[in-house]
Image (cartoon, rainbow, N blue to C red; front, side):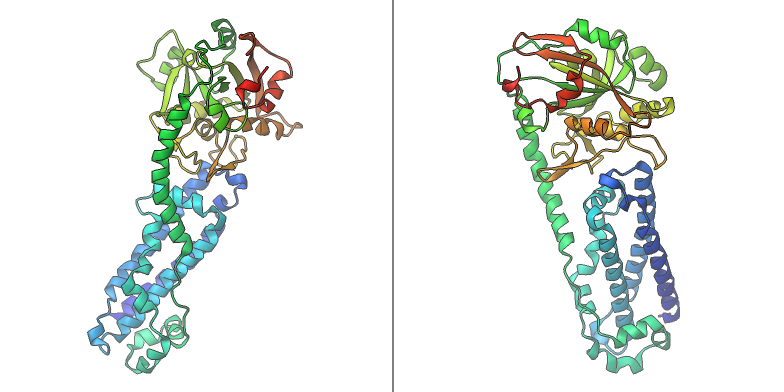
Length: 430
């Protein structure tokens, strides 16, 4: 075996690891406030992760090349030392990543899982193979007497020589790794259970009322001033989901446009030419549907309009349309881009492409075991805006209703801004 070549490769890997570690520590994704990750932050991290993949695979290749045969201890001693050192390097890189990821580890694991062919779990478990643990944990005092038979290229490598002489800490089980593996397995079952539960709850009504309160007359008043990219918040009374979802407003969607405009800009086919369309995440998937299908099953409508540039608004619509046919996220996990809840669809469409891009900051909440954003919390975004600057979001239309008289009306007073503080329980409404 050409030990000189292997030592040269190890030296190259060590230099690469130092550079990658330095670049990983300055990634913007670990500096995001309120876990509001921009698209550029995600792309930059994934590009760097691909370089880590190459590093891990190169080390694994060398570990296989230095395979140790226990029946030839004298002949393979140099291989044993090199493989033990490579395993130590591998383990060290994992520990460094664990420290860097820290509070963001849950999100990072999800991001890697959905965007890379190599899962973080695959690399973090490699060093825990029994054969690797046995080699890694050989006491140093048993190896030192055999230094005289080491290949000179091996013993001349300063780091390897220090590694031989100094005892090393033994491999410790990565409790974080085990936790996330168990959680990933558990989440699969919870997802299936929650899908059954939420579909069951969604069909529970506390009233025999079959007519919802938003009238076509008032809806048309909004359509006369509607703009693509408008954020729509809706609510219907006497529905069981009102109890389980925090706040007064329960659902969020995006107004898109008429068939003619969508066809011209985005080539959306098979749509009715006479209807206006919204995009929303339903209990099945993300779909385009007529706005009348939304309002005929709701009692309240609140419209919020952004003041971003035309270019940003167009990108919002484009990003939303790319999500069509994605599934519904029954565990309300904002870290996942594979499936979306209603507020997730809207907010990720409005997310920043990079740190200089337009967009609004959101504050995620821990609800049960997951990180999410209830539709009612959009009021926090409105209240937290810098009033000295041009507001990013502006309330522009409100269809209110009275349960007792079953009437609806367009409201322009403070009831709009106060509506978010109303009780979530329908039977308490006046």
